[in-house]
Length: 162
Image (cartoon, rainbow, N blue to C red; front, side):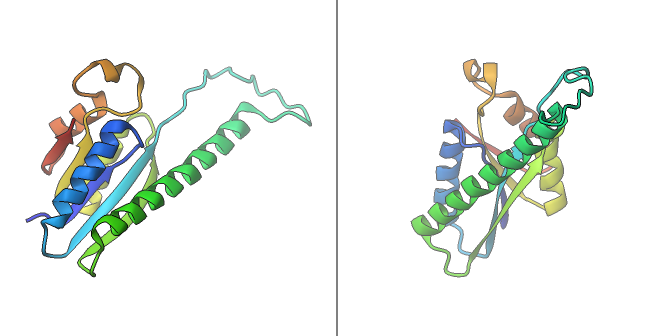
């Protein structure tokens, strides 16, 4: 039935709950299963004139800092996903029936679209996602903007975990 599950993960509480649910879900699947742990690096917006192209020999430009920040976020995300992958393997073992893939993508302007595009390209037939993430005002709602948009537009079933 489901053999390729996409699990967007950002370290938030709902994301941890969706991870735990994916562990329980995987225990019940007897056939081959691939689980893809995905982190989407959010875009950081800077005003166009933030550094006015200022170039001093001992000061980095905003673009240079931004590049370093994105690289740091990518490395931290890879480490976090590898840790969750090992936790998954420890909790249920693999026995050759479960394969894992970790992926970090840059989300550009829309994280939900990045998740859906990746799910389509990978042929995911189930997305398990937390109801809200780490972002701002979504915490006061029952459903965050990313999980809502993914559930409305994904081409495969979406399981939203609260």
